[in-house]
Amino acid sequence: MTIDWKQYPLQEGFFDELISSPGNARQPARQLANYLSSLSEDDIASRKLAAESTIRDMGVSFTVYTEEGNIDRAWPFDIIPRIISSNQWDKAAAGLKQRLQALNLFIDDLYHDQKIIKDGIIPEFILKQSKNYRKECEGISPRFGVWAHICGTDLVRDHNGSFFVLEDNLRVPSGVSYMLENRSIMKRVLPEVFEKVNIAPVGDYPEHLFNMLASLSPRQGERPVIAVLTPGIYNSAYFEHAFLAQRMGAELVEGSDLMVDKNDCVYMKTIAGLERVDVIYRRIDDMFLDPEVFDPDSVLGVPGLMRAWSKGNVALANAPGAGVADDKVVYAYVPEIIRYYLGEEPLIANVETFLCFDDKQREYVLANLDKLVVKPANESGGYGMLVGPHSTKKERETFAELIKANPRNYIAQPTLALSTAPTLISRNKVEPRHLDLRPFILQGKDTYVTTGGLTRVAMKKGSLVVNSSQGGGSKDTWIVDTTAGKS
Image 1: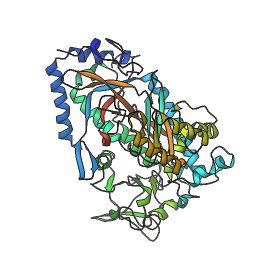
Image 2: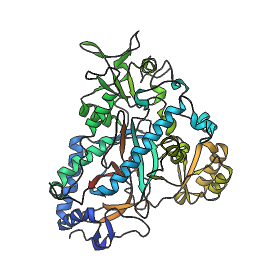
Image 3: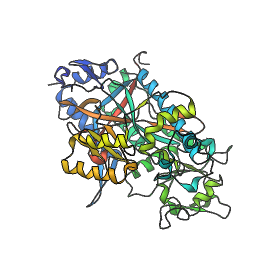
Image 4: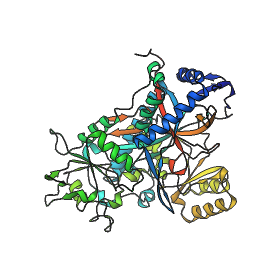
């Protein structure tokens, strides 16, 4: 028995990425849908097994932190890709570029003149109470005025298929290696489809990342020495740190591998002696970067690193302090930030957001906790949030007290009608599962957006939680050009 798209249970009120009506695939997905329908149950099962085998062979894993200890798990992957037309994606990519450019102007302003606050666009107390504002960064001017060089922006689609920004990740965004590995897996599992469909490539991301980092080097005119600074093998994203370093031809280092000399330059310890480092792609949080400036007990960072960076002797990506714009309260102001710095209307809208520090908005949130999603301003990974419709009365009462005690720290949003996509749940049975999308945007001398991104999918029926740490999985994301024949 093959996949019968007429039997696919479309969910009323939700936009499905592949199927528009019973038995009918959307135009960019038609060749894929037809091909999947031509496969037998055994063919589909063998391809699913091939994907799982490939994941094991490639060592694609992620770490889950539990009370019992850290657990390495194979990357959860679904072999039915998510498909977006190139026309739709081009518009979204333009909006993502616009957004990051405005956010970098905003961060640079905050660490210098703070004009946006003086002009009354953003209340001053939001900055003063920001968990990620770093006074140590005031007056520093990174190359090109860019602080957030790598951004992972989470997108969702509503019931009409329109893109909305759910949140920006500007501190240490992760997941891009899984986007690349998803494509490698799919080329092994469905090679026939890649021969027939115009699927935009993603494999050039490491090259774009290297070029962006190289553009930050203080020693222009010669090939820079680039290092990826990792907390080490026990970090949940270590697979990605090693993967990107290897693909870029960069050095993978821990804090103990680096030192700052008396001239405030950074050097890497090698068996051939010290080698100067020009750019550090850091994958550790601000507070662990430099024990001389931040947490004095940190053994992950490098003493003197902030001094070297502030004097322009080394570039740090992302720059310390970039997380000030990673605040979900700041997120609510991004449309105004775009208008203020660029004089443009936002090309991608925010999700409607209620700010709990505002008396009227807080009153509405408290009265509707059973309908809303409540998020703390500076958490990530799906932690510390309340999904109202799936919560208990006790959980809502607890969150009400948290909001009243610290209203600045909470925002609320409507429970979104996250789009769905067909997901294989047995040998030949597909059902809709909710998903989001994390494209990656690079900004240095130029700005670049990945063609698609990391699609995360809630593997549990009806669930809206897509984070892998919370039981979610992933799909390959295909940006498909339907205007041209396959070359």
